[in-house]
Length: 225
Image 1 (cartoon, rainbow, N blue to C red):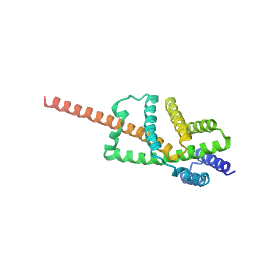
Image 2 (cartoon, rainbow, N blue to C red; image 1 turned 30 degrees about the horizontal axis):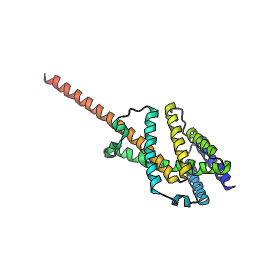
Image 3 (cartoon, rainbow, N blue to C red; image 1 turned 30 degrees about the vertical axis):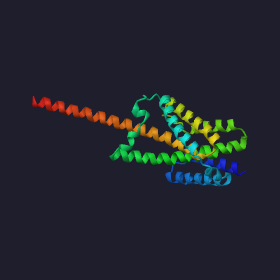
Image 4 (spheres, rainbow, N blue to C red; image 1 turned 45 degrees about the vertical axis):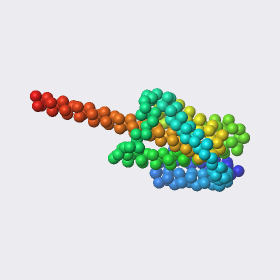
């Protein structure tokens, strides 16, 4: 009975926040209510699942997180350069770019954790309890996760990427059964995408600065002549 109450409540919160409410304060209240419901689910379903934590699955989750990032590069059609494959240069940024990266990275930690708790830890487990069928719970979770991330301005390749990422994480969660691993996969994949984006921006800024420097030098030379 509780699983149905929590499921209906979470759906109601999402639909209300997404389509009916525009006030930011009310949306924050609804978001906090969603977190409270997740806490109730965690206590009822069993917090002992979190405690069964092992090193090897953690290492696998880390590599899977990078694998999902690599998959995203292929699906979106990003050029496979050294900087795109290993965008760790972002951690050396300074100034405004560093500040913006830090803020987006913190949002990534929070959003990735919340999404995994909501869609995998709660929804997937709840659906499995209701349907008693792993394939059905996996399929519905993947479809819901993909549909919720749909926006009019998102390209088809990006939606395909989201679908594949959701599929891999959802199947992985079914076998691992521990949300910590899926959070790590999701977080690492998103963080690498964020870093790659900022590295691209920095490269473009450097190319633009180099171009204007050459242009100024050329004008100085013409003026001297």
